Image: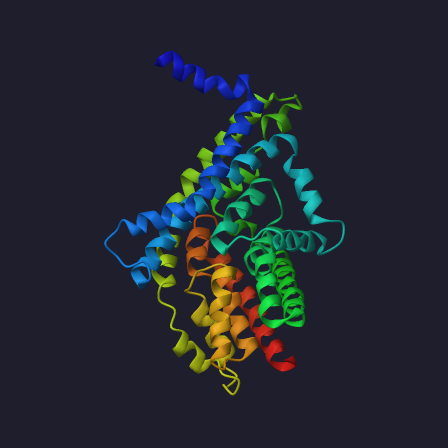
Length: 351
């Protein structure tokens, strides 16, 4: 038994290609089973699947392993990438030579990563780990849940290309602008100490300029997983538990009553304030948007609500608290909320 355990421990060093291939297949296979597994677990419980409690339990049982799998996979890959590319090179790539280029690149990357706000946090941490500037990482964190191909495809199918295109332009503008503002404020000191220490740590390849073996690179990936996942997983569980509790109770009638086309000016900030405590992804919130629109809500007000749900969720703030200090979280919320309010008013004005 001990001999087998020793062989298993050294397997990544002896056959790194086979280890990586089988690990990727296993990760993908487990990820594909999350939905049926969560449904089966809820079905085995003495609750109705279509009830509020059943929906909340399914959400928690699905989203918890999903976010942890994403976090583990992304941090492991970033740990390997870190052995090839120094933080200085990564910073130079995403910073760009002109103001805003790195923010635009990061926000554009968010379009092709259909993550919810909590699922985007692992890659956000990975960017910080690689030395990407703070403002640029925030442009990605905002864009990934808010402006992705899922949201755009659903908006196109329900409201047409003009609404989808305007949402794309304004959503990217919010992500880029917010990242620029946060970057200009120079708030790196408001990262938690363990994140700042991680940013300043060089890999052996950086420190010695020696060529690492693939086995050593894999070891570095495991090291980063243990260092990061070990610190943030309690916050992930707490955040998703809050999101699951709120997910099953969406008061559509009440929200539609204050989001009508003839509602006063404060309906847009009220919609944003209502949306922040909630948590879902674009695919989950757009059917609610359609229902609210069917009850007479104004499109700009509803889209501001949608943006706040998927870009400023309370569960995301709980998870980010392990990475960011309260002042930086408050700045992030304030800047993004201001951009979302502007989007809401512009939509209501032009449509």
